Image 1: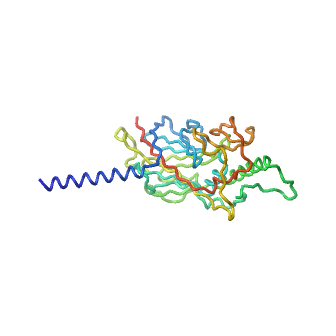
Image 2: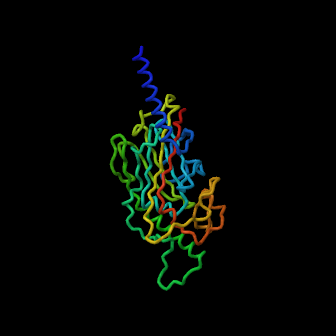
Length: 304
């Protein structure tokens, strides 16, 4: 009898420790309900198949994101309209961690783009644009406008160079692949710029590549999956102090989007390009380039 009671006590302690560990790891992670994907999403670097604006936004990382699933695939997308954050992703890479247990274990990941792929970093990391020889010194507003255009040109060059990705922790496909090549796991990734100068990152991840089984059913109703979007900031130039960019990081879903082409110069909400606020020409447009971030989200597994 005593052995049985003692064994039960040990089991309760173990279960309690496991519960505490899960709570601790999920602390700070945004918890969102699972979304059932009625029609398969075409992975092409476009937000056309997603509900826009994206439902979730990390103000610190300046990333919008969305997650959904059908019975066979997990769909993930990330979006940013901040040019410096776009450069950070394209130069330093984006790592998307996927934990089937719903904790925050960094074992299984998609690395795309791969940092080494973009070697021609020609932008000025002090936030100033590159003036031509004998070009007159522009006013502050014109300098910001020119810098934005230059950053967008660098982003487009970097997108063209983002042609490889790597996988780790998946079932039998942990290698480096060309973006357009097939892999045995069936994972597909793409990145591109949309008409509003928003960088769109997409992935389709078959459950067979990482989950407990190849297809989701009603028995998975109460399960969760943890996903993390990790960016790596560039090294700040020597002697440059940290600056605060006014207008960023407000509450209420304020999403900075720096755009040209009918939008003028300003901060847009959600990349729509219709609403703008005054832009501080003295702020360092490159500030978010130097900041490393991790955005954890715990999503429910949607079932039908």
